[in-house]
Image (cartoon, rainbow, N blue to C red; front, top):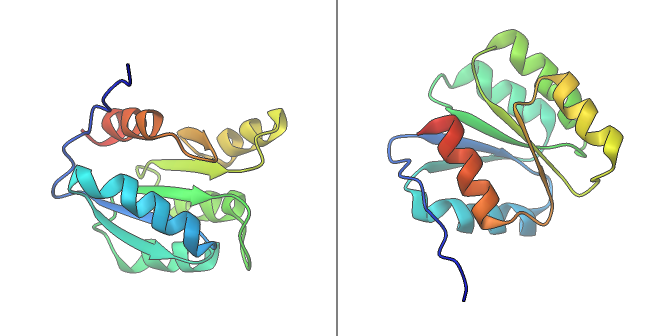
Amino acid sequence: MKQKANIPDLKGKTILVAEDEEINFLFIETLIEPTGAEVKHVWNGQQAIDEIKNNKNIDLILMDIKMPIIDGYQATRDIKLLRPDIPVVAQTAYALGDDKIHCFDAGCEEYLSKPLRKNILYSILHKLLA
């Protein structure tokens, strides 16, 4: 019997997805849509930093770690200097032991390995935003 995902109610929240692969972004957007949260998308770490500088309405960031221009580690460190309160959730296909440690060292609150699993994503979003 398949367990039904507990979809958090995130109406009024805005999630920034920093993801350089369009198919991965579209998948994440599809997972977030039922929560009612607004989704914004940037393609690299520099754009994520710029978005945080220019948009005070971002409530959470889903940060891909391996991106062009500025990677997710450095982007998270820079964002935490600007807005230490904003939760950053690392998402990466490179689920090696050290990667997780580096994500937390950079300032991420949570860590998701790809492919993302809906129940785990919803649990983290609920914990950090609800």
